[in-house]
Length: 299
Image: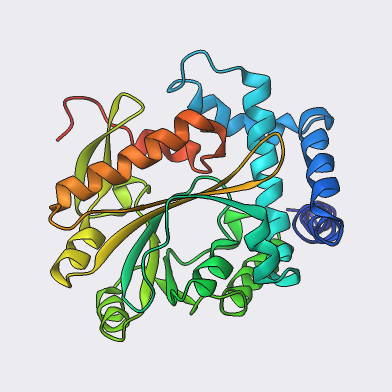
């Protein structure tokens, strides 16, 4: 890569990851959302950002409108970027006013395995969890710059998101890979852990079949198995937003006692299935879908 190309990528990433999201975050949310919604639909050449995901998603979605789907995906991406700054700038009380809640938070004072999804925009969940007395760490794969761009500026953005976590209500990250002892220690201390299971099947050693969008898919179950052995209750959370108004929407589902691992994983998949049918473009990992959905004969 030439020096000119490197400079161009750094400048582009600076605008899309730092400058524009930060400027939108200091505006009133209603105005900022309208600007993002308008730009997601009319920006020249903006479809290129959504093309790779759409190329995969269209094979799994029947009758989806390509232009609207791509615009919705771009909007979800921009809202997530702005949220990186909004979570630092706005109070927990402000966030409570922005979120419509379907379901109820579990009682405070107990450890939970909180399971969410690569769907919607969930950076704001930490303020609400803290308000409801739920102290939680974030279990995730160690991020890399390529998750957000191809420049040094993208790496700074990765560092920023990690730095922000403990300052917006999270206890901080726990990175996957030899993390079982840390999870058990957290639950023993009465703390909770937030994680995700909608990941490529190849990234996990243990998977089970589930139904998703009427197809056969596979999700890892090791985290559920660990929670079951520790007698920790499982709570499902999906954090989205209304694509017309910008209102945040939080769905909460506390799984009943007595479910085995298969049953819990089936409920996890069913919860995601409902969200994908509501807003399929809000799933950020469509490009990984071929490693999640499997042929009927795959074991």
